[in-house]
Image 1 (cartoon, rainbow, N blue to C red):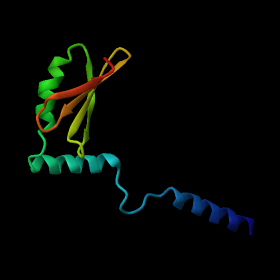
Image 2 (image 1 turned 60 degrees about the vertical axis):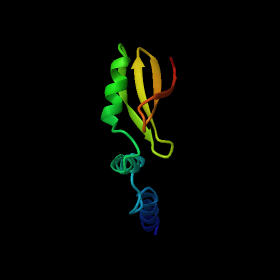
Image 3 (image 1 turned 135 degrees about the vertical axis):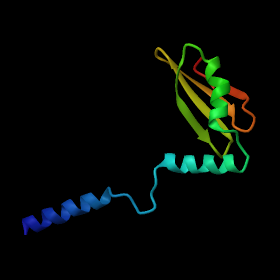
Image 4 (image 1 turned 120 degrees about the vertical axis):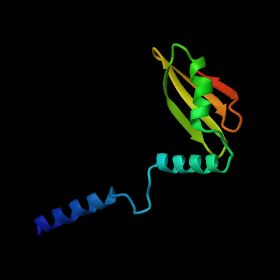
Length: 102
């Protein structure tokens, strides 16, 4: 009886953490939204944005982008020493619209 209770508890614990069939990582949904916006001509390619911004950030390591597809904004993350800098870029025009950490 005790073994049966332990087995049921273990199975319930495992299923509690199992992902649902339609659960996808947030990053996958972001990438799909970005690809759709790019194909529809609503945003510039990330490669184009990076080629304009990254060379201006001499001395900083480029850590990568984020896209907020709903606002049409890329956030590019840079680091120098312990300092993190975010550059916000309009994904439609490639214009820098803000920065933080600098």
